Image (cartoon, rainbow, N blue to C red):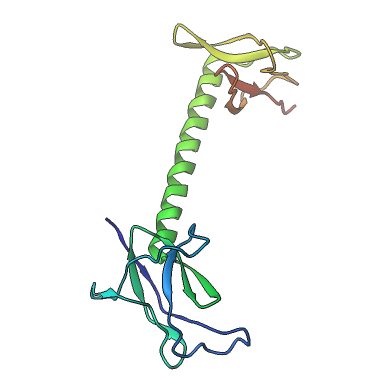
Length: 174
């Protein structure tokens, strides 16, 4: 169970004036019909029957379990809210995914370099494995390599979903 904290915010009406004393409920962001209010808690963990704005229109901080993105709703007005912790978690997940992709790309580049660069003019080749060893092989289907010139720095593309081979395009600098 993760308790997500939502910071205070100013609720406003259609004239962009503070919505003083607006009574509100908190809903999951995918509850587009606003049918099931989520249990909300104050900062000490006490359950709230509603999350209401004060006389200045400020909705106080509140907490919700296991729901990082919510909608605070009062009457016809809905205010999407994202917990700061959720933003940090998303950034951490994105960094991990980027690191994993970089590791995969580095491994593919090392495998390509280990096999050598195909000769200039070679067409329709894929970098694949035979008995666990990387090797250049004739391509079948749409997985192809066209070698423009020779190079010691081959670049790789994502795996081909059709057959699982790595597709490699090689460019040369004279």
